Amino acid sequence: MKINNESEYEKASERADEIFGAKKGTPEEQELKELLKAIKDYEDDFIRMLKEND
Image (tube, rainbow, N blue to C red; front, side, top):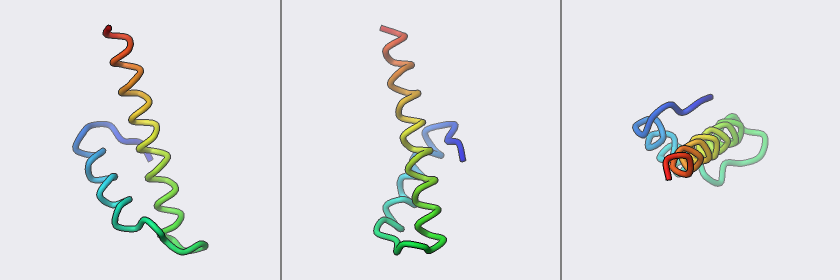
């Protein structure tokens, strides 16, 4: 999963909030892990871009 823009970031964040606390071994837990990784990657890319433009 890759987040490409702010709209996708917002949707992913909202979904992560909805399923936060998912029980171990459930499909929601796996979805949450994927969402959190994609969110972190997007934020890291955004921060790197800001630093490059300073």
